[in-house]
Image (cartoon, rainbow, N blue to C red; front, side, top):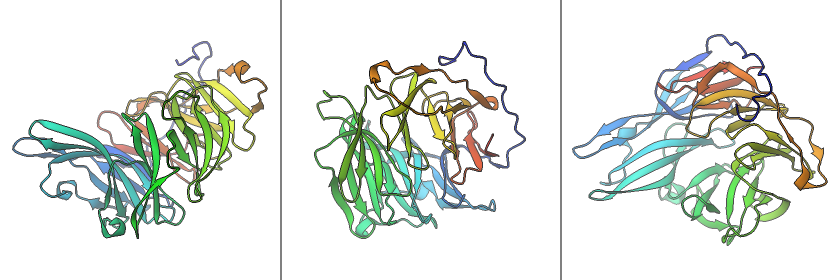
Amino acid sequence: MFGCCAVPQARAQDLDKPLQNIDDEITAFSFAPDGRIVYSVRRNIKTKKYDLQHDDIWLQDTNGKRRRLLQGDKFTRGDALFSYAVDAFHWSPNGRMILAQLFTTSVVEEGRTEDSSQTLVLEDSGKEIRLGKGESVIKDCYDATWLQDNSTIVYLNEAIKPRQLFSFHYSNIATGPAGPAFEGRTFIDADRIPRTNAAIAVEQDRAQSGPPRLQRLELLAQDDKEIATLDSYAGGLSVSPSGEKVAYFIDREVLEVRNLALPNYFVRLRVGLGVFHWSPDENRIMLKRAVERKSGDLVWINIPVLLAQKNPKEVPILTPTPQPILRGISIREFNISPDGRFLAVVLPGKRNLEVFPLPN
């Protein structure tokens, strides 16, 4: 029960049948700014020696019409054999371009394979975008996002493997790869501040000897401002829709929620490690009580008023009462639409995508 077994749970909210259902094996999806949904569907390809995965990418319009943007079995790179699954999607601010993060396994020689993370750049028509007239794929790329100019891409590159510390890099549609940002510095995690060219990041020195530090980064100007020194960091960094708050796990049980303008105002909540998204009003988070790529139930967690904390070592840990969603059924992935009206979930097993009105 993730630290809340002494508190009775609220009754699960009943919901009618989904508004939409995409009956395919979904590997990733994302809402566009205008409510469209880009999603990937698992596709298997057999060769004489290997069984490969080459996901298709589809787009569903707001009227429910669907069209395929990428046919996986036709996505090749010379004679090289590789398998890929789509991990995530990121839309450009104008809703016309898509970044598709691919987890790729390549056959480098007989009997030996190599894993990597790459990002494919697409128009919403399905046309591949060649960066600086070069490749349409950014190699060794994690969590790529668009800046507000709808042309510059910022992404993370592994500085210490496997996925311990990262550095920032740029690329651009017109000019291609543009080199590092915040050169010489390393980060554990980062999340963009909505509708800006800034990000909140957790910085740590390359030797991993000092404490993690919460930073505000201006990605174009390459300026930074330290917000707070953290006691610890365990993942899940997420900036609220208004950009006023940030939340992250400090261990496998406790979520810390902090005011970015008044960093000494924060609370700690015992909710259990999981994946979460903010409600539109930022008074709650929706938490899947399981880590990424694992199935768990969905609950609402109320965020109390953030209080000034004089001594970080004596901050009380509160235990909120979770409110179950979707009758407590297990889900694999979920997200809330940008307008705050809809909840989309991927169910375990068959992995179809269902869209509901956002529960109260």
